Image (tube, rainbow, N blue to C red; front, side):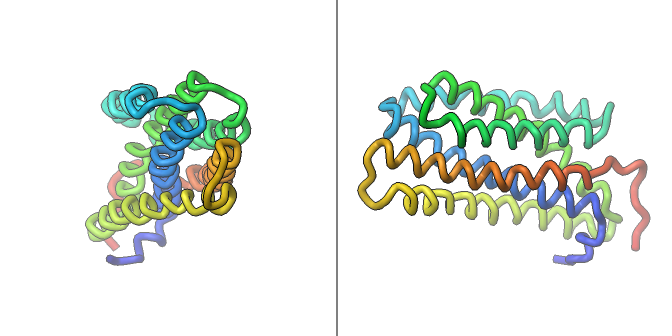
Length: 208
């Protein structure tokens, strides 16, 4: 892969933001079921049903966000997305030990909506900022980063285990999940800066 793609500011901003967003997505998919089942006592079926609205919201919004991107560009979408992601993860980190499943549902929907605002505009604007000769390399970088940072998102389990201990009580396990969300919220805050690097290309960049 040609790393000259990172010379382009908009691509670099899209890359970093997308990496951190994907890590947040995978981590939440792992952490929330643990908390809902072990902390709040929900069954596997109840946990799945509770997380369905967020997944549906993210999937169904894709076409609408694509049309919005065509009308208003990337930044009006990715900035609220980054702020919403940071806010939802911060609220998870602060409120998780004190709230029930309905608050978790609302925050998960907020996180899912925020990620929906990020992914399509980031991919489109990031690749659009590159000259044609780097499109294949940029696409490969963005695609592989999702896999790498998705796998890295599972490292939040290590944070949870480190805080909770080997044989945790319910309260200790909740504290471990809370600590993992603190780490995610800090990482998400970085995206508020990196998404400002993303701009909608006015026209196809010339080949270099």
